[in-house]
Amino acid sequence: MNFIEIGIILKPQGIKGEVKVKPFTDDVNRFLDLKNVFLDENGYDKREVKTSRVHNGFAYLLLDKVSSANDAENLRGFSLYIDRKNTIKLKKGAYFICDLIGLNVEDDKGNILGQLSDVMQHGAADVYVVKSINGNFSFPALKRVITKIDLENNLMRLNKKSLDEVAVYEV
Image 1: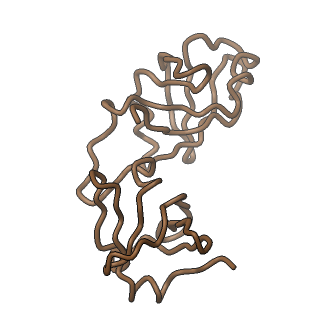
Image 2: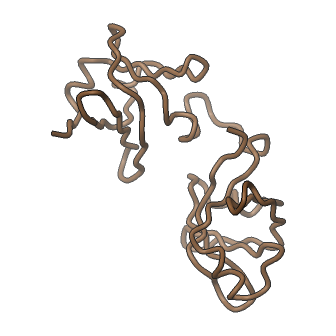
């Protein structure tokens, strides 16, 4: 994937075309340095960021081609992306969620458990959701559970014993 989703436009802010954005990042201040973003209109439409500010965990952007509240209203619900080459360098052991979704999940004995289908972010740890042939299950993203993430080989390996202690299975 050449683009990384960084947020979603929630609503217009004011009358001059500014939009309120719910960020999909740990550090909302990253929005302050954006020069361009891409909208998921018809493909990826590049837009210059004229101004940006952050307040109370949200980003507020003024984009080119948007000069009124009506223009901004037309962008409600659109996702914002950046080009992958402009992403920040992640710390060792950190991953973009979009790179994790779709990984094949196996236990430490090589048994296929399913495929990572979602990452939910709320609380102390992310919660990973795995879709398997026997139904979905979820578990907190803990180091004692996840023993290996190998993006090149599309693989996530889990410690079976630790997984059994924390997993929640759908019935």
